[in-house]
Length: 298
Length: 283
Image (cartoon, rainbow over all chains, first blue to last red; front, top):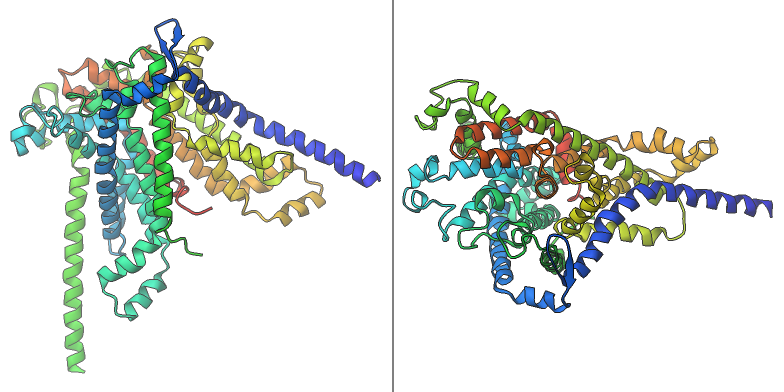
């Protein structure tokens, strides 16, 4: 009788403590993640000026999705992801495998390959802005042609590739670090038994290394894809979405300057909510498609 | 005997050749990766009128360009702002994450699973989808151009809570029971057992949070208009816009902005690896 009273009191006290411990996170996540998402969904059917908004209709989402600006930005974003993610992944894995052998001085190379993780989007973008600059950059002198006039960032044909180069370089350190950690967690005896079975270097890589690091590759793919879809700083600093909107990604369409969304929070909300759903669908596909091929030890 | 030693020599030769090849490949790739950084560092030490005098060679040396970039870009103020904002966000995230994770792992309360799912679901919401409304919130609070505006939305993250929860789950429940027998309450257990046992993960989360907030770009662009509240990232953007005719200043600016993080990452390499790989490790 009294025992159950004590435990009831303890349960109350525990619930109170839990509430106190969850409150700080709950308030922040509620106020700055959940509320703004819900609010943005409703804001997305409005058009806003500087001081006030007026409601149009839910059809604003359909109109925005069908608009040329959105369709073009969606295609640019997909291209951007399709360039940066596979190339970044292959280069990162290549460097990690190259620096995985225990040979003298490999630590220095590892530090060098990790180093780009220290450059923020702004630092990397400003660096590449000057590197690719047609008037002062060294790349223009070496390559000539389009790199000289009008410049790799200024030509509609090459701008997205130039932005991609900057972004691939900036993300290389991250990919290298994560894949290296993955390689080091592969049990060495697996390689030995594959060696005994007569597997050569390439077969050992495809049949042992790749399956064993597949969870890491999935993680890197997801992160790099998200970075491509959410990329803003590199576009803002390298091309401002141009030339001819060839580098206007979805995130830049929502927050960039001189666009239909500029100064209109309603239209911004429409675009970002659509971006949220695009990312949600993408995440679903990535996990469905890749989960099957990923090997999670035991 | 003789043949085996000859074979041995041949194998050694192959290994030797392979090793040389590997070093060559490592060196070439390292040069390519470092190239943009090298160009910036060389440029940062050249006087303005000598920048185009052979871009790749360090044939002039002066600190004046760095000094001018420091003054013109207000980079001292920007570095302090970035440091204050990042330290506040990091410490707050560690505290909020540890507290929430503790509640989810060691406390029993009604609706625990539902609350946890709601918290974790916020991971699916991209930052970009919340910023428009958050900026409006900041406007109505009068927090545009303020440290509060730069920090408050990021004082807690589902990622941090999840990461700490994963390590708290590895602490055996028996330890909590034993501590309870000894009269140690939840706060005592949190401070004396749970946190000390999780120190590596907490350190990794701290570094990750610091790096993420240091690198923030879009949010500071949206809610600061006053250069007194520039972070290093928006400061660099401002410097680039203001000094397009003086590229050497902007180049020196990138070196100043990048240096502290380079030094920090080289000193905390192990925590960084742990922080970056946390998401890749199965829970």
